[in-house]
Length: 136
Ligand SMILES: [Cu+2]
Image 1 (cartoon, rainbow, N blue to C red):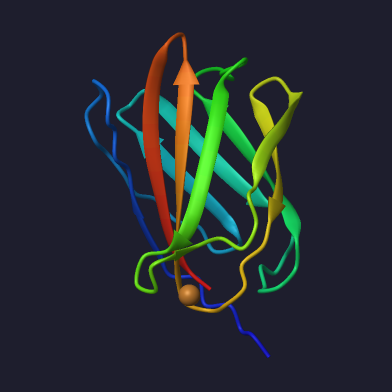
Image 2 (image 1 turned 30 degrees about the vertical axis):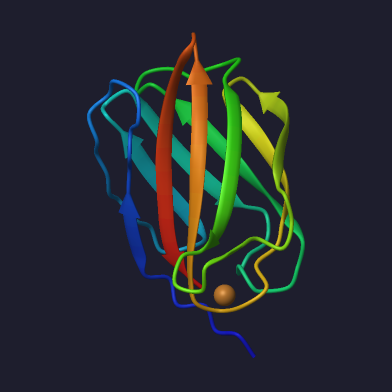
């Protein structure tokens, strides 16, 4: 039985030109991330509560603080740094289902512990990397 304890440690790493930033959590399987005052991410799991071994989708809502950011190209990878392995699947953004809302399909976490997701967001030729750390 997996009880999901949501303790969020969120950090953002911006590889390109933007300053690094971070941190806000919420109580359900939603995650809020901020990258350099430039982007705000709201990640919403379609699987609630978030449990292991179920393939599911997330919605990634991307805004610049005032409006939706449309047409972004988003890649993601995930894994467990402490175990030195990745996700058992290769989730992908498959659609922008509403302006600024991106559908990520194929997410599955196969063990409890500390997970990390790295989002690479390209808008207008600039790439911003944002890291989400959380516990399952
Ligand atoms: Cu592991």
